[in-house]
Length: 127
Image (cartoon, helix red, strand yellow):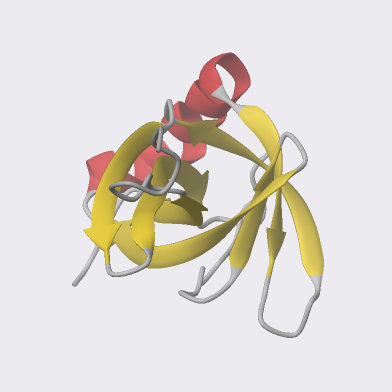
């Protein structure tokens, strides 16, 4: 799909301004463990609990928007891949999905899973 004149203008002028004002520094680590520090727009963390047989799985999710143009200030990742990782404030997040937009941006769905213990009936009750 060909890019429009607006897309070209946004990549050239809009993306750097967005990243400068809303961006934070993150480290992208690909499957070969090569890392690149780029500027990204990072959403707040959302948390969802999912019951399983062994307790409750806690799913932490953040949306990360990065540039796909490697020549812009702050850097970019030309082809971000699922199964790679993003490090945000020292915490590693797995990239679950990648949605690329015309206009030189990609939105990454980043997840981190943890388990929470569940009390069992009668396990710590008075006897």
